[in-house]
Length: 374
Image (cartoon, rainbow, N blue to C red; front, side):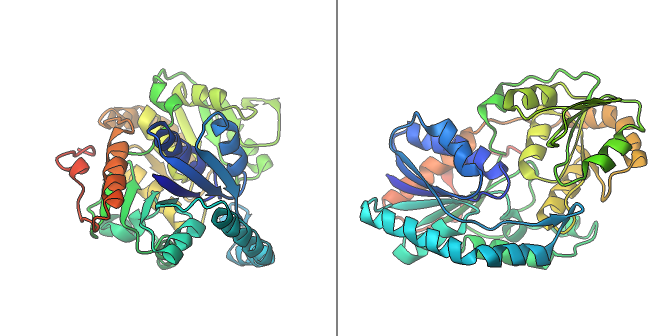
C-alpha cells in the first residue's frame, strides 16, 4: 500500500518512535512518503537511507518557544507567525511535488502531524493517528485531573482535537491506561526502539540528568549541593565540575547511562518517561510549565508509583526523591514490559481494513483479550 506518513518535528520523541513504525512498514512491503519538520528530517534521513520504497520530504511545522523553563505562549505565537509565509510556501511545494510525481497515497498515518492529516481530508483518505497526545481527548482522566492544577488543560485539549481530526482510528501509546471514552480508540504500549528493548537493567550509583530547558548555571549549582554523581546530557558544556559530569550526546552512551542509572531526573516528555519506565529506572519528572500534556504524564508517573512529580527542581526535592528510589524500584517491578507487537498487529489490521474500504470499527480484533496494563 502507498502510505503518506506525517511526523511532527517539535521534540525528537515523535521521530524516534516513527522510525520504529516506518521501518516495520517498509519491511512488510509498503511504499512510503514521509513528511517531517525540524531536525527530525536529518534524524530520519540518516537512519533510513538504506531503505527502498521511501522518500522523505521536509515541511515546516509548529515551533515552541521557552523562557526560564516555561512555555512562552506569546513567544510561540510570534515565532510561528514569522515563519507562517515560508511554511505555507514549503507545504505547497511538497503538495505539488507529490501530485507531480503521482505518488497517490491510499492511506495517511500521522504522528500528531497536521499537514498529512489535512492532505487526507483534502483527498478523502483514511487517517490512522499514532501518538500519545490523544489520551487528553479520548480517555477518562477524571481522577488525575482532580489531583492537581489544570491550568491550560482546555487549551491543550483544543490543540489536540485540531491536530488530527476525524481519524479512521486512534492508536494511543501509553505506559498508563485510563479508561477509553471514545470509539475508534485503542491504547497500546509505548513504542520502544530496538536499543531500549535490548537493554538490560544494571543499576549503579550515578544519576542521569536530562533537562534541556533549564539554565546550565542554575542546574549545576543545585546538583553540586548533593553527595551524588550526576551525568548531565543536553547542555553545551563539556568536562567535569565537582560531582557533575557533562556528557556529549550519543545514542549508545545515553542508553548505557540510562539502563545503569540509579535514577533519572528529566522533564515530562513521553518518550523519555516511557523508556525509563520500561527499563524500570525511578524518575523525578519536572514538566515544562504550561505544557499540560507533560504535566499529565508526570502525574500519572507519580500516581502509579513509578516516580515523583515536582513543579520545580531544588536540592530538597532531589534529596527526597533519591531517598525514595528503592521503594520506587520495587513498584516498577510490577510494570510488565512489552515489545511493539501489539502496535504492529493493530496497524496491520487497520491497514487491511482500509485496503478493503471497510467502515471504521470501535474495537480492534487485534487488541481483544490483551490487557497489557494489568
